[in-house]
Amino acid sequence: MSATTQTSGRFQQGLSRLLQSRVAEVLSYPHGVDRYLEVFNPLWSATEVRARVDAVQHLTADSVTLTLKPNSNWEGFVPGQFVQLTVSINGKRHTRCYSPANSLHRKDGCIELTAKTHADGFVSRYLRDAVRVGDVVTLSPAGGEFALPAQRPERVLLISGGSGITPVMSMLRTLCDEGFKGEITFLHYANRADDMIYAQEVADIASRHENVTLLRAFPEKSEGGELTGLFSSEHLFKSVPDFAQATTFLCGPPPMMAVVEKVWEEQGITDRLHKEQFTLASAAVDEDESAEGEVRFARSETLVTNDGKTLLEQAEAAGLNPESGCRMGICYSCTCKKTAGKVRDLRTGEITSGDEEDIQLCVSVPVGTVTLDI
Ligand code: FES
Image (cartoon, rainbow, N blue to C red; front, side, top):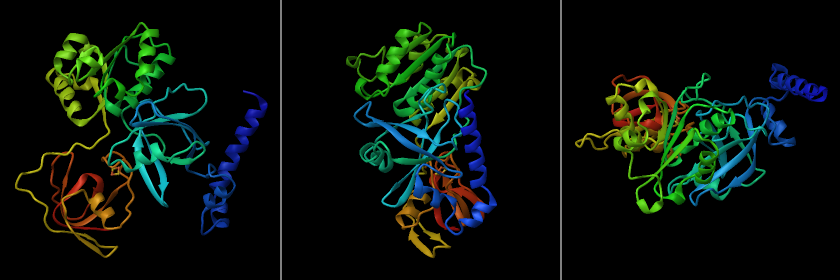
């Protein structure tokens, strides 16, 4: 490292400490330090991770890949973890979770996030259609238990479906950059060959690395994958016969993950399966259970008829703006106090019994009348 770089690093650390100090807070009251810094450069912030969009790509027709250059508040990630990305759309902040897909050893300090767009994906459509190079977005620190262990496993099996490819792509790129010598099998499920994000790069990696086996599975044989159909134990037993010895990382749509998990359970090797889910699996609802009662947002003095949707959706439909992030129960940013009534957790189907308790709005639906401290 050159003397100039060291000096500039020390200067940035000193400046950062100064901006986070009580003195800076008092001097910038009531707007806060960031409001003044933004005037000079939207990337500057005393504490927030902000990132400039360096590139926008469309690897498939229904996805967008953003290359982001974060400011010096970014502390890095472990392959597999996720970040919360916040964008401002029509003056309102919206947050969603995405897993960096880049290698840990990427040299330019950028991170790469890929979002698959859905017809009702408000934020993902915005990222695809409106985000431009030079825009600035906000990121949370990286988090999540789904992560490549520091002690690399000897044998790795990566299983993904659809946009679940992003965290395992980061693992694959990282391991290959490290010259990992163990066997890696990359088993990916997509609806069509054209829908497979990173298709070309994964194929290139497999052709360059003898220890990487690529297995693509599409519903139709005509799509040209190595396997045909949805995930099944036959795929596994035939194509990855030593799967029980592998450390497996799984990310994909809930139905696919449930089938994979069942196989690992039957084999008694669930401790070797690490998983991340990026869409909410709805627990089965009792047939007799229909939406009834009211949702009372006490602090906002707002009352709506319970329509059976999640409390986050009902709050937003009522014109409220509670904090939220992943919208699938993993980031806890939507946690709030319920002061009366019962809710059902969409992930487990469990109905809470206590009146006063903290709940996650994005994965809770009311069972009868509920009062929230919002
Ligand atoms: S928004 Fe992340 S847990 Fe609810």
